[in-house]
Amino acid sequence: MLARATWSKNVEFLLAAIGYCVGLGNVWRFPYLCYSSGGGAFLVPFFLMLILCALPLLYMELSVGQYTQNGPVGALAKLCPLFKGAGLATVVISFLFTTYYNVIITWAFYYLFSCFQEVLPWIDCKHEWNSPNCWDGTAMHNYTNTTTNTSYLVPSIKPNGTISPTEDFYQVKETCKNQERRYVLEKSDGIDEPGKVKWELALILLMCWVIVYFCIWKGPKSTGKVVYFTATFPYVVLVILLVRGVTLPGSLNGILFFIKPKWELLLDPKVWVNAAAQNFNSIGIAFGGIITMSSYNKFNNRIIKDVLVIVIVDAVTCLLAGFAIFSILGNLAENQGKSVDDVIQQGPGLVFVIYPEAFTTMPVPQLFAAVFFFMLINLGIDSQFASTEVIVTTINDHFHPQVKKYLKRKEVLVALVCFISFLCGLPNVTQGGYYFFSLIDHYAAAVSLMYLAFFEVIAITWFYGARRLGRNVKEMNGSTPNMFFIVCWYIVSPLFIFGIWLFSMISYRPFQLDNYNYPVWATMLGWFIAALSVLCVPIGMVHSIYQAKGNTLWQKLKNSIVSPLNETNAATQLNLYNGGVEKSEHFDAL
Image (tube, rainbow, N blue to C red; front, side):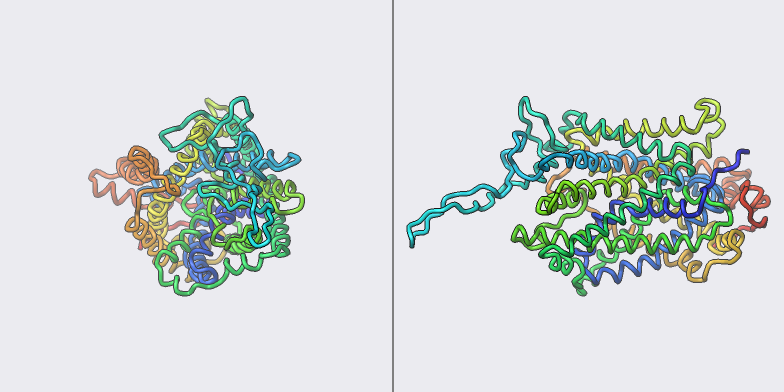
């Protein structure tokens, strides 16, 4: 059996994990959530959920990946075969994630290329391709002072129904004959009007997949070298933006909007759910990436050190991004004579509409804009290639003989996965692609993630056993985890996950994009996308019971619960090449 590749240095794994966990959500989701969910008061549930949910679950996934030396499907199959479908579900989510997440990086590249002009294309409405609704505030009209009977030009009041140049550049759909279409989305009126493929975006999307390919084509050996830059460069930019932001007029107002406590909002259950969901999504629990990356660790790698570093860096990044974002938004609000409340948005609107508008008021706006969008690319690319590696690792782990026979080399498998994901991502770069992008983003992860996470957690901590996992950690590191982690694995984390899942089901509303209501068929398509991962759990159960030993259904069910690692020496069974004490384990369920 071929020895599993490992990270050259622990710091490479650490940077890769940080790059995977710290993504675009830290920049465009956390600041808005903090502001809208109680400001400084939101930090109370945020850090509480970080300690009680994100921290122990990250420890759990890192331990599982490092001990089993397998991706999510193989890891769950070795711990509790009955729930191996939960591991497969994380791979399905990762695949769906890769098809649309790379589109965000594509938009960032489009903006980056647009920065290399004498005048930024979103700075005014003087281009022939601008829509009639574009308003840049430069229009003037005559005003007559009746007292002095004198007339002079004054700025016109912004008409209703108009949009800013940055919004016009980002999503306007109007076309102009014989003119180059330089705006980004050319957004149609709905998902039922897909229109044409934006070939500029399609070519950039292909380029992004080529970049992802060369980041992971040699496994951890190539990825480990890339993350030295991609995981560290965003922090340089965030510090530059923060230093620049706090020196701008109005920055203090923006920061106060960000951190001013609204204690009364802590009584709203949704605030606590938002805090848990932010930690969950930011750390990447149940996406398969953590288990996959840790499976390339040396067997005796010190896990708790990595856990603490990743969690602390992720939390600090959220706060750093929040101060940097709101300091500049405060300046934008002051320049426009508005409240910060009137300019803040979340999601793509923040980084592709609001922030580009803020750069237009700065000296050398092309430089600040280019650096910002290059930062977004680096933030996104780590999460993108880590999620792609989940798919590649799973296929290679379970179909290695076939890969060896038909594809010859792993590099060909990586190329095939990247190409298929590229083709599946093309609907996102049509004129109606933004609607499809938002639909799959909502249903592929937001709807089903907590459901899958719940089954993953109970499979590991209840059926395999939290105490047994603790003994596995001792086998690797020489000491068992603190009782705090055992209690969180057994009780606290599963209850939090179940509570979030239940609350999301109770408060479910049909998905809307701004003021756009999706047609019934699109909502059904969304639920079909969600079902692709959800159904993996029961299908995996049926398959495990069918394959289990036993003459009766009850015997097969009992045997499908028992971990195969108790049948032989665990270290031999796992084919561990990097040290570790050999030890037999017995079934330890809750």
